[in-house]
Length: 279
Image 1: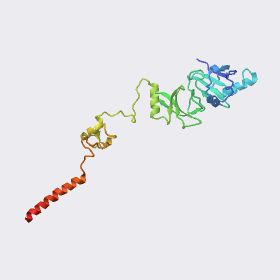
Image 2: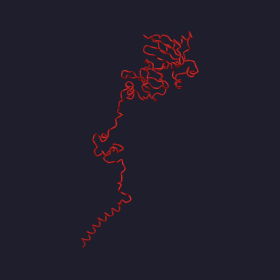
Image 3: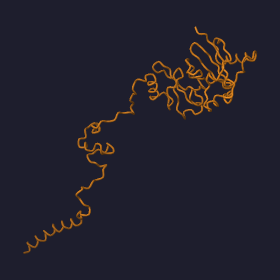
């Protein structure tokens, strides 16, 4: 049986870490620095008492420091680690509160520090702090939806699994079809992507001849030439009429002249007939 323990990690003294020590997490995040075990020394290690949470551990260690002075006074940038049977939880001391770290020891924690009440959560590689707004069980796996505490839904939300691993960081709504597809691909990366209603396969050429369930026989010659298939009516009405190559617009006979010839032909015949009747 694994003994449950509590540990205190304090940042090392040195020129390289001077700009990070005693700084709140938001300042560290703005400087693109994430606390890690390599920059810390373990200042204290003790057994974890029953039903003791991180706040109780901080109070106990603060009293111990005032009595014995065996380590530096607990301050911002320190990390309190709780090693339980269910997993390891790392808490960054941020003033009077805490920021839960997932990756302090280089890998995501094996426990499940996320709940629906989780706030001020730090995601490796993401700026700022996040809070849990929803969770869902998909194929017996618990997933959490987190939104940014400062920007809210102005930026995409992040989906984490029960171990704190980032599943998706492009979710703009709650657990919708897109989120379900991301979780499915995470659990089954070998499966092909499922086609959605908005991703219909392209039509074959013979399928484009159909309109309202009927085959448009007279419009077959239009397929491929019309801009839109709702214009298929048997006439290439999206094309400019082409003049036959043998017609010269300069030599084309005048309509007025042809009309006058027709009138002369009609009225001229009547005049001849009247002349015959008079004679």
